[in-house]
Length: 185
Image 1 (cartoon, rainbow, N blue to C red):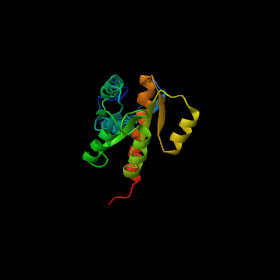
Image 2 (image 1 turned 90 degrees about the vertical axis):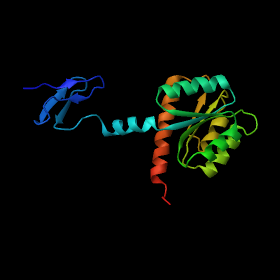
Image 3 (image 1 turned 60 degrees about the vertical axis):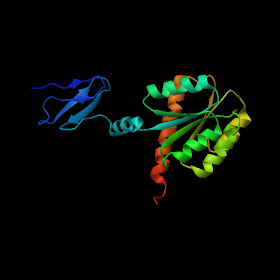
Image 4 (image 1 turned 180 degrees about the vertical axis):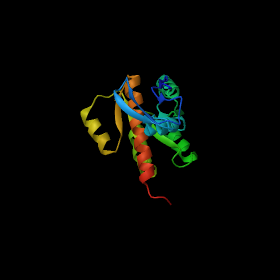
């Protein structure tokens, strides 16, 4: 009689796939019936696969912030594109295939084309791409204005790693939903 094992990713596997067995998993108290399939959540599996092909754009004139945020996102298996200002971001998006950029992190205070102008322009041309604003401003009115512009999240510098990653995950999911619901040409 074989016994099931819990591997490093908390996936219940059974050495004998021919027999169906019901086991109680100690970490969750759940009953699981196993035959020849892996009981990792299908959503988790597909999300993990998707993350590796997800591209995030960082638009900020602060090189140090771009480097730190880029490093955090790369360690989380995102592809990262960086732009110094709004003009460069528009050029990069124009050169990218449609839907290649999943989320854009935008600083509001930048030279040439600032963050607010960039958001307005890109919302008109790339409506499925969510924006996350990075700013040092703690202004309630600004938050309200950005919400009306359709900004997905508003992060105040300095940004915590956990908050950044959670905001990006939510924005990427939103982008996937918008892309899936948009009419196909």
